[in-house]
Image 1 (cartoon, rainbow, N blue to C red):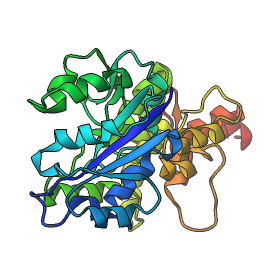
Image 2: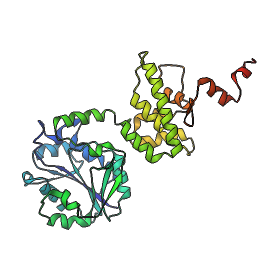
Image 3: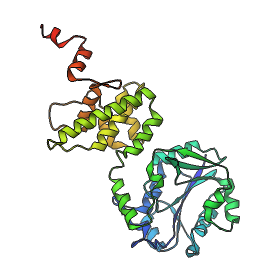
Length: 331
């Protein structure tokens, strides 16, 4: 399927002190983040609709996308939508529509929408039973969009089209940036996106792991958190969210050759790169040298759980050796 992208960056940002498209998150402008989001999905065309401070937005984009100026931007968002739609190539099968103030969506979400698209319905990412952005809209709806008077906005018009929700584990499809407080929340959330939130990873685990694997992952996560809590009391700084999420997903590659490495590659492709060291080496990562990290605790927690049942160190030793400690010691 050939898809395009329209990014809406024309408004005044009236509820913000600063202009939203040019705000930065971790060294990149918000508008550039939105453009870069779609690089892996290789869109046929990416359009950024500009209006207020158009020259500054164009300078921030460089050659990364085509900018289209909407001279009527102060009449509302629908005019910018129509301006972008008019400039789409006519041989596209569909297009993503993304307001610039929703800049943290994960590439994995775009991939699943693109893979699920067959042109028959508008696709929406759904997180925890709430529709989010960006919709992927069939191109055959373009004439209806251009003919509509804009009453109630595009959302109202899209309700009249066939649609389908695509479940995703990505909370950012719901995270917009209308106010300064929202901007602060997004910047804070971005700092931990590589390990995911517990809510996100719980959804990912439920949708990717078999029942036994999910139960085992929950047990390992619980043990890892208890170990981390005990060690943190002794001034060893460990990230409880990393312990929980890596423990829950540590067997995501189960059933594949070298499932530890396969699991690390899976979470890496999903953008959860912070989990890779824990998941990719959880069979043999323990080291007696250096400082204990979350990776070693995941290794140990996995050894102390059989199925969903916690084991003592003695029980684990006897299970893997096939002998009791008393027999080995000749007692």
